[in-house]
Each structure stands twice: as C-alpha cells, then as structure tokens.
Length: 329
Ligand code: 2P0
Image 1 (cartoon, helix red, strand yellow):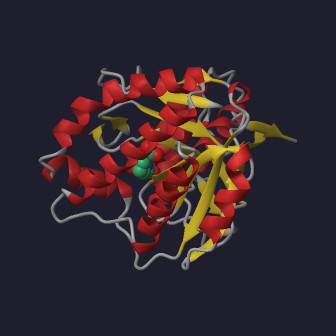
Image 2: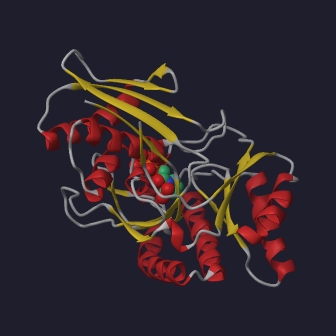
Image 3: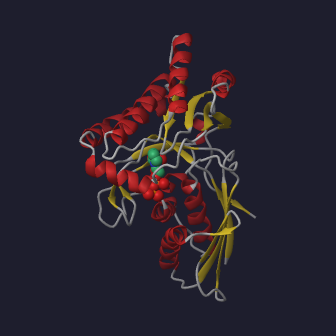
C-alpha cells in the first residue's frame, strides 16, 4: 500500500483570500489559477502499513512540526474514510525548490499528498475527490490536483462537498504562456496567510467591495483565458493582484507583503509595456514579496534580463503551464 506522486505549484490570477470555514478550508470566493510545469515540484511517497503505530511526515528530510503533521493527518483521515481503511501512514515529501526560495509549497505539497495517499489506499479517486482531499491540507492545493487553467469553485454547502477545482482549459491550450518567478530578498518574516486572511476578513472595510467585484472579474478572466487574449489576461491579473494587496493594507493591523523590490518590479513591468505600446507582461504577488510575471515566450528573454538587473532580485525561474500531478514509479 505505497505510492509516489509528484505535483506542482499553481499561481492564482484570481486569488483565494478569506475562508467561510477555517477547518475545512472553504473559501469566501472562487479563485482561478494556472498550474505550473515541473520546474518547481513536490515529490511525495505515502505508505499505509499495519506495522505503523502513528502517522508520520518527513518534510525535506526532517520530521514535520505538529502543525504540518496535523494538516497532513486531515488529508490522510479523509482518504482513510473514503477507502474504509484504518492503517496509519508514513509520508515522505521533498520539494525541489531552491533553498530559501520563499515560494509557497503548500499547494504542490498537499496536492501530491492527496494523490499519493488516495493511490496508496487503493482508491480510484475522481479529480473532484482529490481536490477535496488536497483542500483539507491547504486551500490553494485544491487547484494543484488539476493541470492547466483551473477554477476552484467556492461552493455554498457547509460540508464543502461543492468546493473543489475544475479545469477551464488544459496546459496545451496556451503552451506559449510563461510565468517568470522573481525571487526577492525578504526584508522580514511575514505573517502566515491563514492568519492574515482572517484579519482582512474581520477588519478591512474594503474587503466586502472586493468580494462583490470578484464574480465579474472571474468571468472576464475565464473569457480571456478561453480566447487567449494576452492583454486582457495580464491587465486583469495585475488589477487583481493590486486589489488583493489593497485589502491587505486596508486590514488592521495592516498586512504588508510587498517590499521596495516588489514595487520596483511592478514599475519595470509597466515601463516595459509602455515601451512595447501594449500589455506584454503582467505581475502578480501572493503572500510574499516574490513576483510572478506572466508573459508569452516571445518576451521571456527580455523580461528575464530586465528583472534580473533589479537590485534585490536573487534569482529568476521560468515556468510553463503544466499538466498536473503525475504518478512516479
Ligand atoms: C492563492 N494564497 O489563491 C492565494 C493568494 C496566497 C495569496 O492560497 O490556510 O496556503 O492553507 O488554506 O492555500 C495561500 O493560502 O492557505 C493562498 P490555507 P493557503 O493562491
């Protein structure tokens, strides 16, 4: 009862920020993302065994802390319940991310865990089931069980049975799309996103306006993706990123993830677009200062060169749309 799977991160263009249920990671709004190729990946092996007395999680060669283990157990429990098994599990998970990259690994990590655990348990799980299993570990992981362009439907039900991800289009729909990840020197340790989104939901007077605006933005985003309308896709992506960081700043105490280097990247992207006379690149930022710059293959080298020159940009990594989790032997 053992299986090994790899999964990759996804970078949202309509972001998840706020929960209607903290335990089940049910979001306040639907979100949209692109699953990346395996330039960045997590590889996870799960073994269920009669001989195991408790669940165990080894993360990048080290015993996981109780918080990390607790999240993994939520996923394992859901898989055990569905597969009607009681065995404890041993989980070994490795990220290939460059050390100190500061890229959130929870999405690829819990997606890989959900796929490996379901497979090891002998469950012939649907993507819907896998998305729900992954969501219990981390919200954004619900989107990483599917490749290409993905929507995580917020759902309305209390038990979360209607809160899972679906594919908008496969990676092959828009293979020339690129995400240039700019790893930025962090100035100080940030607050975790789970806590931060709670503060925003509770204290930001602008947050209700964001929630009201998002369904229309999501519809426009899906339309831009389906039509491969690069300019529209990039404009919506940048506007959404700024709206997210606006409600973060509007929280009390304010939540500030962007730093001077992030802002410099934003300015450089607009400068590049101005020079080209159209929108050819668009940034988005999650719960940290690292930039994700979406563009097309034809502008990749130019953008990489411009961004790499910015003082404080430590490294750039180029990702393409990816096909989602894969079973490894
Ligand atoms: C997203 N983020 O949609 C947004 C954008 C960060 C900013 O999902 O508490 O690690 O584990 O459900 O998924 C980060 O939050 O949060 C996130 P939990 P998660 O990608």
